[in-house]
Length: 265
Image (tube, rainbow, N blue to C red):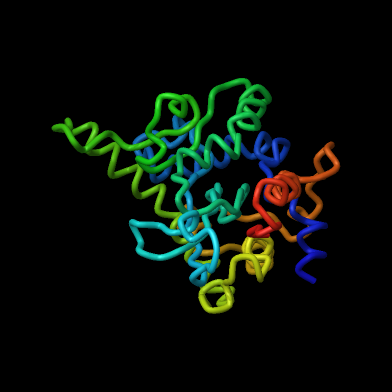
């Protein structure tokens, strides 16, 4: 069943350019209620982006690839984008936890799809991110808070506070995935090279989106006052022109790069 869901629906975790272009004004207005409460219609951000670490069992090989010093455990990492209606619009991974968020942004290459979306809507729109995405090459696509290592003006402090209130939704979404699918939290069974951990997490993300559609929303949707798509609308999304989804392409690359097929998929 895991293989079937992944093969049939993995494309749902690629940025859907058509749906996001049609929903752009709605998503920007919903984020604007928190990120720019004085004038929600002026908000130009339509998604939130962040990385999430999934803890894994102590690996017997390539331990240095998976050890995250900040958290003192081994893990794999994914990058997700969440809309204000509670749907994970994009999820990329897995990569070893030693990769930071900025590196995942470069590898995932979501900026290519975002550029095409901006061309469709005829204006520059962005996503909301944490300070890990504060880099020159990402400024055109990701809005982050102002650096707190210097004195901030009252306007900058207000901007940081509003951004935090809007961006908290992605933390709720990641937490909800672990709450719905307890298998992800059972570390002794999360064995790299033994279980298909990459497919497992991505399938859990797809099923979490289905759960949101069936229940008419989640904490994120209620927070912003948005309405998620119906199950029929979500699953009837047009398949990409390419034969294989981005997740399939990453899977084939990972098998070639890692020795002995010691892959996270």
